[in-house]
Amino acid sequence: MASTVIATVVTTVIAFVIFRSDGEPALATPLTGFSAPFVFGRFNVPKGNPLTVEAVALGRRLFYDVRLSANNSISCATCHMQHLAFTDGKPTAIGISGKKLAFNSMSLANLLWGSEHFFWNGRADSLEQQALIPIQDIDEMGQNLDELVVELNADAHYKAMFAAAYGDINADNIAKALSAFERTLVSSNSKYDQYLRGEATLTDQEDLGRKLFVAHPDVKTSLRGGNCIDCHSQFLTAGFKPLYDGFSNNGLDNEENLSMGLQIVTNDPAHRGFFKVPTLRNIAVTAPYMHDGRLASLDDVLDHYNEGTQLSSTLSPLIMEADNVVRGAQEPISLNLSDNEKRAIIAFLHTLTDHDFLTNKSISSPF
Amino acid sequence: MDKRAFLTLVAVCTMSIMAFACARTVNKTETVSLRFSAVVGQAPLVFNQILYANPGGEGSFKVRDFLFFISNVKLISESATYLEPGSYHLVRFDNNDRTYTIILDDVPKRDYQTIEFSIGVDKTANRSLIAAGDLDPNSRMAWSWDVGYKFILFEGGLALDDVLYPLVYHVGFDENYKPLVFDLQSSEYQDLGMLDFQVDIMKLFNGTHPIDMTTLPSVKFDRQDAKLIATNYQSMVALCAVTGCPSSMRLSIDQGTLPF
Image (cartoon, rainbow over all chains, first blue to last red; front, top):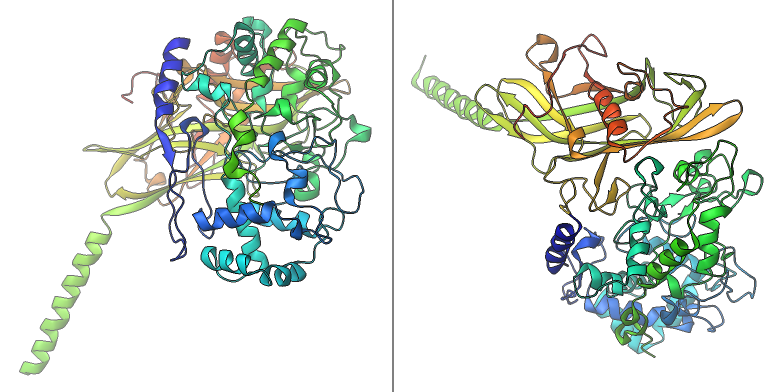
């Protein structure tokens, strides 16, 4: 069975989803050759912001330009560094005010797939909407958008780039350009991808980790599992796309200490303590972990899920229920994985590191 | 009648006939809507509140998430069968009016006798990477590609003695793909513009043998347990009569007797 299925995957992966767009500006050049693995599934590029060569080039330049911050000291890339899969290695980001921000800098990979709500608490409904928020936030980049437009207008190079991609220099077009660039940040050449394409073989330990990753444990059928797939989809390893399916309470805090999370956005008490399920692509280089960066290492993450989850009224029933041994009613929540199994899951997580993505010059700084 | 009046009459008649002919062409297809409403027993579904009695034992339960697949919607007349293309719908009720509607456009107008659809994902699409309708191997309904899709996802909690116990009922597997057939011939169901269905979540647990959630709080990969819930969900959907829901008009049918 397994070999037949893998063969099917391998065959279908050869077919690529090729990008097509409608209605791009007359002068802009549609981005050709943009592709992604079949197993990532369908994706949508907003009609109002097609992927074009000019838009992506402009977005890349803006992404790496410190002029986007009030005192020209930091750019998007200050907190989203390519060699760390566009994270910053800090528990929570630090912007121009020098204050520690509330959230960990999220990795920017495969943003065309998975949840269509952005930020850890889901407060932006599109990348375009997301892009302008950190630029203006007083503690992040602290920039006034009108001043930024004036500043960019004084630069003949930017004037030409905007003219070719969108037209005028304005806030909307800045947001569109940044989003277009971010949509091209596709990580799809990790060892796991190569394995799915039939180009690489996983070690026994990595394959055990993969099997545990995709299994919700069931003692009744002797199926052991790490329960990861209940929130992290099997190929994208990210949260789910529809509505707020890509958000969950993963048991970091008990009822008393439960923060608002997604409830801030939906006003639904059932969403209290829900945060965005991040992609696990390149997870080995994006420490520390969780929305507030409280866990320093993957060992800590596995310990959390194995024996550290805290009970609260909105804790995922899938986390409460999952166990690899028969658990008594009064016993604390635990997956009861062996040390060997925890190490195997971590080994599998390391197969999600995509060195091409971390070093690809076409998405690095143009300056 | 003078000649001019006669010609005018002829012209008007001709135009009317042409208009009628055009209208006839337009009317060759119709839009059929299937609207599903969720109830638990007799009451509309309320999420996240401990309101419902454990059917086979002590305690009360709440529903946190409830989703299921409806596949292969067909309208069957004596002469032909209409099959919706790419017919995979992930039915969910976490919206304001707790309903889910499937709209079939351009259905050839015929005298349909029955409507058929299935709970679950057919064996061709299950355990595949086919991207049709709502199928998505990166969704919460996918177990993993070699296990296939969950046909029904129910997650919630059972409150008993001030403790909340998790409830997880994930049911899939090919043998639990259940075709349902409903009679459209009775005059009560003639309006295909909006067919109302009721989905009773309590039926998952309240079949021939009511399920005690304290002894069976989760169903995942055990084939017997999955079969038990699947047998129950076979009678979860009812077609409403004009006079109200639920209806007892569902024809009983054994799985496997229908070509699909």
